[in-house]
Length: 65
Image (tube, rainbow, N blue to C red; front, side, top):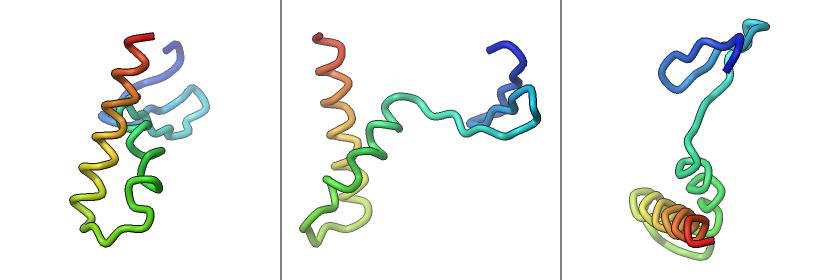
């Protein structure tokens, strides 16, 4: 990453702008949140666990490709 300095989960690009850096599992989990919470009375913890379960399944499918 030329011109970038990584600080924890944040990256500062060459223009001085902060950019959030997430791994693919976190990205997939964020994308799955709506589906994980749709039409349910689940707690926030249960929804988060379900989102990561879906993310893990997506990663497994990606690796099997």
